[in-house]
Amino acid sequence: MWSKSLLWPAVILLFLALPFVIDSNYYLSILIVIGLYTIIVQGLGILMGYAGQVSFGHAGFFGLGGYTVAILTTRFDWSPVFALIAAVILPGLIAAIIGRPTLKLRELYLALGTMGFGILIHTLFNEGRELTGGPSGISGIPYLSIGGLSFDSDIKFFYLVWAVVLLVLIGINNLIRSRVGRALRAISESEHAAETAGIDTGKLKLKAFIFSALLAGLAGGLYAFYITFISPSPFGFHTSVQFVLMAVVGGLGTFLGPLLGAALVVLLGELLRWVIPLVIPGAGGEYEIIFFGLILVFLMIFRPKGLGAFGKNLKPPAVKPSVAPE
Amino acid sequence: MLLEVQGLTKHFGGVAAVRDVGFEVSEGTIFALIGPNGAGKTTVFNLITGILRPDSGFIHFLGKPLDGLKPHQVSAAGITRTFQNLQLFNGMTVLENVMTGAYLNGKTGFVRSLLRMPGINAEDKLISKQALTLLSEVGLESVADIPAAALPFGQQRLLEIARSLASGPRLILLDEPAAGLNSAETKTLAIFLKKLKQNGLSMVLVEHDMETVMEVADRILVLNFGEGISEGTPAEIQADPEVIRAYLGEDDQIA
Image (cartoon, rainbow over all chains, first blue to last red; front, side):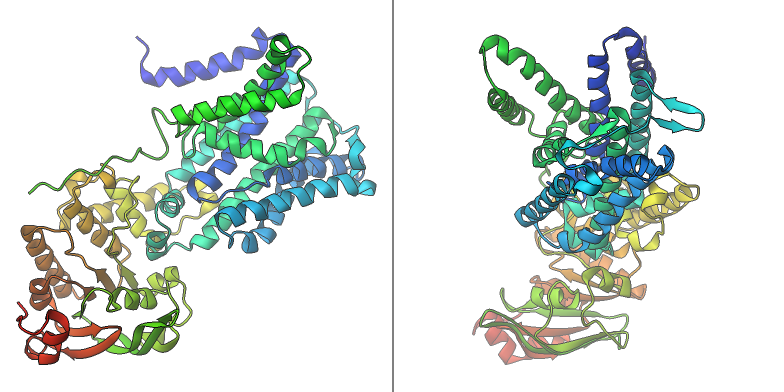
């Protein structure tokens, strides 16, 4: 019999063997994209699931990371490693600057504020031609090389991205079980009570926002090294919405939610793009969106807490209070 | 003087929720605020803890003004509270609730938590041990690992008090701690509050259960329509005809 402790190593080993089974670059690239999105949604999940703040601007941070790598490596001849570090730090700095006023907003206003930021950044990518290359973007980004190791193939990149996913997963698991994690969970349960416990909720929300921006920047930097070309189109408002969707569909406050959410949204998108033209000849992209929406609506009806809401959750499930015994 | 409140006034729209309220709480005593619903008792708590800002008046704690402090800074200054409608962290275990209440006693920050730097486990173990000691004082150590939401109501009240004690405050504000408790639970609560007082903790109590108030309070302030109408010892308050008129109606006697 397999004990439970053997299950996870087995799953991970099987996953690591995937590139040898899959000999199609198409499938491998999908797995890499899922990994990159998972990194972003992991950070967004902390922001949304614990600090209770929504962001419709994370494609902006994602793009900032990507453009940082593209500009620094092609225009300023930075070494890839330093460019990647900058791609993490810059979005974090910008989040620290815009976070303080933005996080004072609540609910709908916060959504609009972050959305405005995302659109602003996207516009800058399009219009800042001297630096960003405008709509045609920047090509010729070198491969990422760390020490003597160059990530010049999809297989190598697959392992790099999923190693990062695993590290972030471990980090978040550490975080949630710590003093800071308890404070974050406290904010999502009752902000008044959290303040009473001495938690500076404004500051902690800001930290969660910065953390999520750092991860989005990291994913963006890796994305630029993977595609070796960058243009504004993947960083629009639509992408920000998709990130929020992944976080919610995967399940906020759950361990595997970000991964499941990213996988479902990416795979569903690919599947619909392939299936719909078979069913409805000549159907355009708008049909995809309709079916996509329908599937997600049904999913949220039948699994309102998201795909990850089973088994071992980061947040223990709430239990209905029982009646006080006499 | 531990807590000094003077000329405290707060309007909501045109209505004065609290008008010119003043009182003093000495170290190691229990001070009760009583009065009919809507008299402004919870508003006074919200003003002291920084959830609301007063229109005028001042609040001094240990000789220092609390003006403009945010709720978490008031906690850091040594005042914590409970809520009339419980505000537990329902998804967390009983133990985690109390450990979160001890947030101010820890140091571990965001980055150190992510990386699980050395020293974190030791700090967490210490805080968890202290939290368990506190839970055993309120008789909840056997349910330490179940979600707070699964506790019966009476135990949830006790848990909220334990959480408010966890950071080691000088003063706690208890907003109707006996509401929803049965008579046996209320008696246990009164005994516990007196024990806390013996240990040197000071309390401000908002409570409708007069038996408990008269038993535990050292001094009482009666509020009616936002104004203080009488202050004194339980015996003095019970003998004050104006209190009886305002609070209980003409014919009743205070328990």
